[in-house]
Image 1 (cartoon, rainbow, N blue to C red):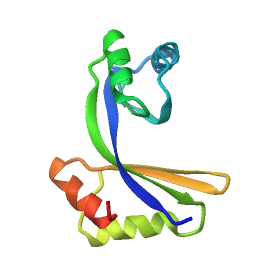
Image 2: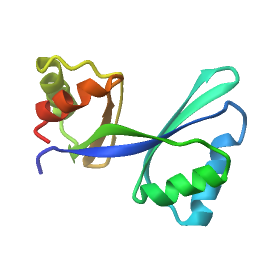
Image 3: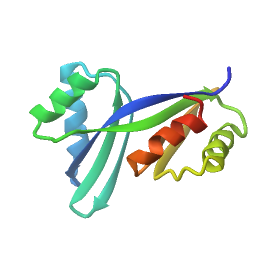
Image 4: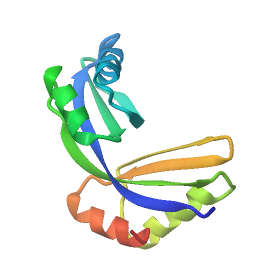
Length: 136
């Protein structure tokens, strides 16, 4: 199978950088029946963290986060996946670089014979060129 890219939306939140903050969110998602495909979280400062969620039902997840006192924001991103083979990630990144698009964040991982990644851009104006570079 070749690598396939698609446009996605993530729900992004700011949360306290404290023990259990992400666990509370995932417990809320579980109770609400929100299926999370992928998530990313990291500390921004000693008191603040950022989390991004790629979910199957954006509205259900947004409602859950809002009920929990969060202020989720939608963000455009590109998700790609394919066979876990040497050079797959480099191939996608080279397409983006040749198009002159600067990505602000990315994550890549493989499980068994499958590989996936997400790409974020900082500027909304860079999203259309990113999609064009990846033929989506």
